[in-house]
Length: 192
Image (cartoon, rainbow, N blue to C red; front, side, top):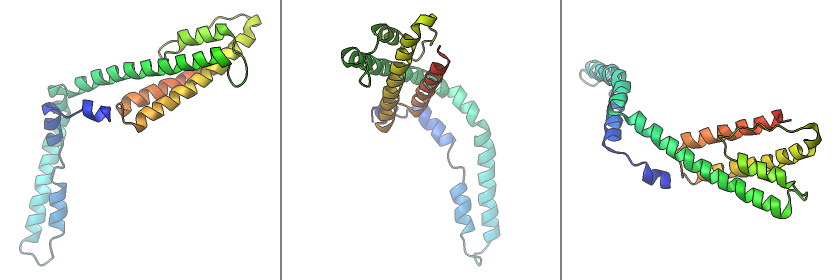
């Protein structure tokens, strides 16, 4: 619910909302429901339709200009960036918790190489690459890292879904972070 509290509509947002209004759709629908024997029904329907079309073309055609002119998009872009940073920090904390757990008790009943845990801690942020130069003698280390990374990604995905269900952040920011998680998971297949 924090998202709704933080994202209250301001004056600019209200103006865009008014400008983007329904443009006479209800009026046209109401005019269409007039009984057939209403005096000048055809004229009333035509007038309602004309007003709707004028507002659709006039206001609808200038809506993008109004949004740009008021700078509403810029405000939203900055808010999304801030939210994505906060989400990324939460996901980094989730990864750290999983790494702490793996350090103490392993993963799925197997001990995890400490070097894999160290690399995971360094690369748990979604904006960091998955490049790892390992020699042929480190196949087990890479497999341990991949196993731990998949567990961390699963935990992070669960955290994102929880954030979405609590309406903590904008859905656009959450969707972007989910896509980054998906890309990180796909990148694991290329890691050799």
